Length: 251
Image (tube, rainbow, N blue to C red; front, side, top):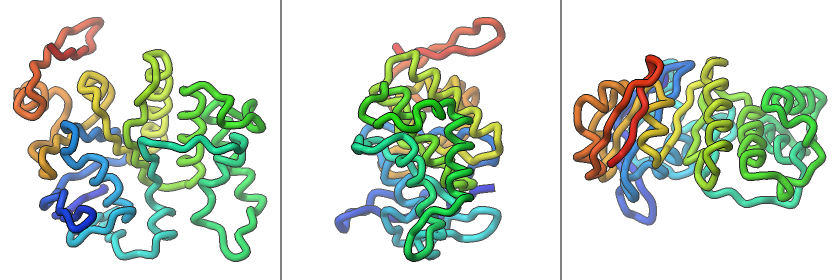
């Protein structure tokens, strides 16, 4: 179990998060939903100590990760930001970056690192792109390469900030499929999404945040039927059932 308890924090002396508490389950996708400026991205960065917290705990199997050295946290939690620079390096070199937390001085890769990198590139179906520059890939391929980097980090927890942003629908579905595969492999997946429908249809659990405070956590069905989405987003959300599966839309 991953438990977030009473997290308070922010940046530039501004408190953004207020007593944030929720949980995530192993092998499940937990999506964090909220309007712009609600604290979603700050929350993800706080969970892996990119932004320091003023108080609270991040418990993985009852062990508090906050306060550990950054490389030890990075061996437990991988984080992919929403905004990514496109470096002038190959796919394989990018994926190797995921092994940084395990490198000791003088920071030379070992055979184990290359074996892991090749394995995750094969899993993400980008092994044939290993020597291709990142800048030459499509948006969907780039995102799969970054997911491979996170997977190479060999962590229990993966944090994803808007993993489908700027992708057309076909690439969105490809990326969501890969994220589901990671959850099926036993990873804790926490992702921030702005697309309400995408989150409701592809998550096991939803966490709603407003003004840096958690307002509700539950299954997509629970969240939808509670009518809380209209209060948080000021939109109406509808649902239709097709082939025994719910599909959601905003109106």
